[in-house]
Length: 170
Image: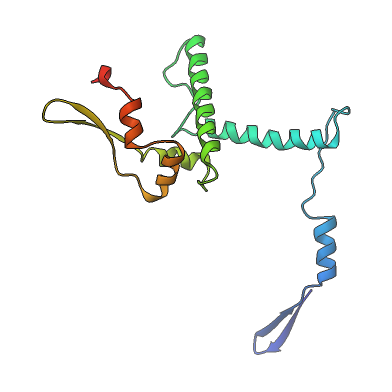
Protein backbone atom coordinates (compact mmCIF):
# COMPACT_ATOMS: atom_id res chain seq x y z
CA UNK A 1 0.00 0.00 0.00
CA UNK A 2 1.11 3.55 -0.54
CA UNK A 3 0.07 7.04 0.42
CA UNK A 4 0.83 10.33 -1.31
CA UNK A 5 0.43 13.44 0.82
CA UNK A 6 0.51 16.96 -0.60
CA UNK A 7 2.64 19.08 1.72
CA UNK A 8 1.98 22.39 0.01
CA UNK A 9 4.15 24.58 -2.24
CA UNK A 10 3.97 21.80 -4.84
CA UNK A 11 5.82 19.31 -2.63
CA UNK A 12 4.63 15.76 -2.19
CA UNK A 13 5.41 13.11 0.38
CA UNK A 14 5.35 9.46 -0.65
CA UNK A 15 5.18 6.67 1.91
CA UNK A 16 4.57 2.98 1.38
CA UNK A 17 4.54 -0.33 3.18
CA UNK A 18 4.29 -3.95 2.10
CA UNK A 19 1.68 -6.23 3.60
CA UNK A 20 3.83 -9.35 3.94
CA UNK A 21 0.86 -11.70 4.39
CA UNK A 22 -0.89 -10.41 1.25
CA UNK A 23 2.35 -10.49 -0.73
CA UNK A 24 3.06 -14.10 0.35
CA UNK A 25 -0.48 -15.14 -0.63
CA UNK A 26 -0.08 -13.41 -4.00
CA UNK A 27 3.26 -15.17 -4.60
CA UNK A 28 1.96 -18.60 -3.68
CA UNK A 29 -1.47 -18.49 -5.30
CA UNK A 30 -1.24 -16.20 -8.32
CA UNK A 31 2.25 -15.33 -9.56
CA UNK A 32 4.33 -17.77 -11.60
CA UNK A 33 1.49 -20.08 -12.56
CA UNK A 34 0.97 -21.49 -16.03
CA UNK A 35 -1.84 -23.52 -17.44
CA UNK A 36 -0.68 -26.26 -19.77
CA UNK A 37 -3.39 -27.69 -22.02
CA UNK A 38 -2.85 -31.02 -23.72
CA UNK A 39 -4.75 -33.65 -25.65
CA UNK A 40 -2.47 -36.38 -24.25
CA UNK A 41 -4.92 -37.54 -21.59
CA UNK A 42 -3.05 -40.81 -21.06
CA UNK A 43 0.12 -38.98 -19.92
CA UNK A 44 0.85 -38.39 -16.26
CA UNK A 45 1.31 -34.85 -14.95
CA UNK A 46 5.05 -35.47 -14.74
CA UNK A 47 5.23 -36.58 -18.39
CA UNK A 48 3.30 -33.51 -19.51
CA UNK A 49 5.60 -31.22 -17.54
CA UNK A 50 8.73 -32.93 -18.92
CA UNK A 51 7.40 -32.59 -22.48
CA UNK A 52 6.65 -28.90 -21.88
CA UNK A 53 10.17 -28.27 -20.58
CA UNK A 54 11.62 -30.31 -23.44
CA UNK A 55 9.82 -28.05 -25.90
CA UNK A 56 11.78 -25.08 -24.53
CA UNK A 57 15.02 -26.96 -25.19
CA UNK A 58 13.99 -27.67 -28.78
CA UNK A 59 13.03 -24.03 -29.33
CA UNK A 60 16.41 -22.96 -27.91
CA UNK A 61 18.18 -25.33 -30.31
CA UNK A 62 16.31 -23.92 -33.31
CA UNK A 63 17.10 -20.37 -32.17
CA UNK A 64 20.80 -21.33 -32.10
CA UNK A 65 20.52 -22.95 -35.53
CA UNK A 66 19.20 -19.67 -36.92
CA UNK A 67 22.21 -17.73 -35.60
CA UNK A 68 23.86 -16.39 -38.78
CA UNK A 69 27.27 -16.13 -37.09
CA UNK A 70 27.65 -19.76 -36.07
CA UNK A 71 25.54 -22.51 -37.63
CA UNK A 72 23.04 -20.79 -39.88
CA UNK A 73 20.57 -23.27 -41.31
CA UNK A 74 19.62 -20.82 -44.03
CA UNK A 75 21.18 -22.33 -47.14
CA UNK A 76 22.88 -19.71 -49.22
CA UNK A 77 23.69 -20.43 -52.85
CA UNK A 78 22.00 -23.87 -52.79
CA UNK A 79 19.56 -24.54 -55.60
CA UNK A 80 18.67 -28.23 -55.46
CA UNK A 81 16.73 -30.05 -52.77
CA UNK A 82 19.61 -32.48 -52.29
CA UNK A 83 22.09 -29.68 -51.52
CA UNK A 84 19.64 -27.95 -49.20
CA UNK A 85 19.04 -31.21 -47.31
CA UNK A 86 22.80 -31.88 -47.11
CA UNK A 87 23.39 -28.35 -45.80
CA UNK A 88 20.68 -28.79 -43.18
CA UNK A 89 22.12 -32.16 -42.14
CA UNK A 90 25.60 -30.64 -41.72
CA UNK A 91 24.16 -27.83 -39.59
CA UNK A 92 22.38 -30.35 -37.35
CA UNK A 93 25.54 -32.47 -37.01
CA UNK A 94 27.51 -29.32 -36.16
CA UNK A 95 24.95 -28.37 -33.54
CA UNK A 96 25.03 -31.87 -32.03
CA UNK A 97 28.83 -31.74 -31.79
CA UNK A 98 28.68 -28.27 -30.25
CA UNK A 99 26.06 -29.45 -27.75
CA UNK A 100 28.25 -32.42 -26.85
CA UNK A 101 31.24 -30.14 -26.22
CA UNK A 102 29.06 -27.75 -24.19
CA UNK A 103 27.71 -30.57 -22.01
CA UNK A 104 31.23 -31.84 -21.45
CA UNK A 105 32.50 -28.48 -20.17
CA UNK A 106 29.45 -26.72 -18.72
CA UNK A 107 30.57 -27.44 -15.14
CA UNK A 108 33.60 -25.16 -15.71
CA UNK A 109 32.06 -22.75 -18.25
CA UNK A 110 29.38 -20.32 -17.10
CA UNK A 111 28.30 -18.80 -20.43
CA UNK A 112 25.80 -20.12 -22.97
CA UNK A 113 26.44 -22.17 -26.11
CA UNK A 114 26.62 -19.11 -28.40
CA UNK A 115 29.37 -17.60 -26.28
CA UNK A 116 31.15 -20.96 -26.31
CA UNK A 117 31.28 -20.85 -30.12
CA UNK A 118 32.81 -17.37 -29.97
CA UNK A 119 35.27 -18.30 -27.23
CA UNK A 120 36.42 -21.51 -28.93
CA UNK A 121 37.56 -19.39 -31.87
CA UNK A 122 40.27 -18.01 -29.58
CA UNK A 123 41.92 -21.46 -29.31
CA UNK A 124 44.07 -21.58 -32.41
CA UNK A 125 46.71 -23.98 -33.70
CA UNK A 126 49.71 -22.56 -35.55
CA UNK A 127 51.78 -24.46 -38.10
CA UNK A 128 55.47 -23.78 -37.46
CA UNK A 129 58.10 -24.63 -40.07
CA UNK A 130 61.54 -24.92 -38.53
CA UNK A 131 64.92 -24.32 -40.20
CA UNK A 132 65.28 -27.93 -41.33
CA UNK A 133 61.78 -27.77 -42.92
CA UNK A 134 60.37 -29.85 -40.09
CA UNK A 135 56.76 -28.89 -39.47
CA UNK A 136 55.42 -28.74 -35.93
CA UNK A 137 52.17 -27.51 -34.51
CA UNK A 138 51.92 -25.12 -31.61
CA UNK A 139 48.84 -23.84 -29.81
CA UNK A 140 48.70 -20.08 -29.64
CA UNK A 141 48.46 -18.57 -26.18
CA UNK A 142 45.13 -19.41 -24.59
CA UNK A 143 43.33 -16.81 -22.49
CA UNK A 144 43.12 -17.59 -18.77
CA UNK A 145 39.34 -18.05 -18.85
CA UNK A 146 39.63 -20.61 -21.66
CA UNK A 147 42.49 -22.62 -20.11
CA UNK A 148 40.14 -24.74 -17.99
CA UNK A 149 37.91 -25.34 -21.03
CA UNK A 150 40.95 -26.43 -23.07
CA UNK A 151 42.00 -28.74 -20.23
CA UNK A 152 38.53 -30.33 -20.07
CA UNK A 153 38.57 -30.85 -23.84
CA UNK A 154 42.07 -32.36 -23.63
CA UNK A 155 43.53 -29.60 -25.81
CA UNK A 156 47.25 -29.17 -25.15
CA UNK A 157 50.45 -28.87 -27.16
CA UNK A 158 51.36 -32.46 -26.31
CA UNK A 159 48.05 -33.77 -27.64
CA UNK A 160 48.01 -31.61 -30.74
CA UNK A 161 51.35 -32.81 -32.08
CA UNK A 162 50.50 -36.48 -31.63
CA UNK A 163 46.84 -36.48 -32.75
CA UNK A 164 46.76 -33.98 -35.58
CA UNK A 165 48.40 -34.59 -38.92
CA UNK A 166 47.92 -31.75 -41.36
CA UNK A 167 50.78 -32.80 -43.64
CA UNK A 168 48.39 -33.57 -46.48
CA UNK A 169 47.01 -30.03 -46.38
CA UNK A 170 50.27 -28.09 -46.56
